[in-house]
Image (cartoon, rainbow, N blue to C red; front, side, top):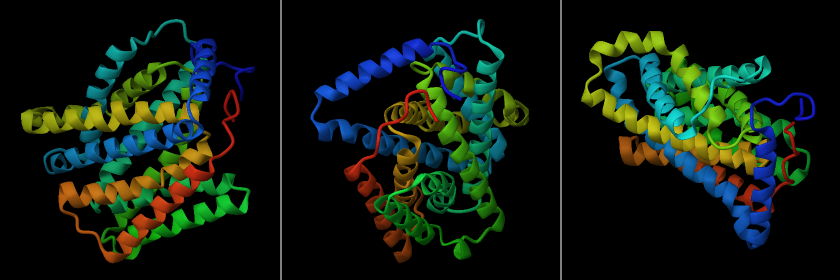
Length: 313
């Protein structure tokens, strides 16, 4: 489906104009600077996601993962709605279908990932989650050099994840479910990002996610004191508002397959955050895996890729 058939969200014309203006600005920059913007945004968003996850991990001993997801999205939705000033009226059924679909993926992805990190180390969970965008990269690869980058990233993920030593079959299962959701998120957010301006689509999708998790949030209300709400507020701002906003901007600039491989940096970032913030010690194979995924992401950054097709894929 392209913009010529159905506009997914309001502001498509404005989004196209904004995209053209952005390309003109990037064209005036040195080539290496323009090429580095997208990957740089991925790195910053990855760091925000993992710091957000680390800040909420201790809360999991107080309230259930579903409630953690609900509170995070309730806070994030409130912040995003203030920033985006999204309107509810004047949207078609197709537009609401896109918003609701995006919100469902956000809620399910965050819930399954939270369930995973409640059982297995942060770096392991993110490495398993990376199977989703990795599958997109593998399916979209055509040239030998690109396939080499994907294969290198895959080997690094295996080294970091070490599924046989994960210690929790359910944790591995939730990690893989989060990966499937991440693949859907990558594709949906790319389409939403290219057909909206600013944070409009993300804000409404966050509201949908918060509503879906509302029953779980309600069960945790008696336990919501400052020791719970403050870490979850930090997690919401870093892991949802900042991270998803940066990822949307990345997907406006870079095609989804390239972004999927660049996400290979995220297991490495997660493993390091787990070591520093959560004292989750890295094994020698995990260190080798970190090197492999960073190198794969660097290969994609240096060699670049063709620009995204206008109107999505």
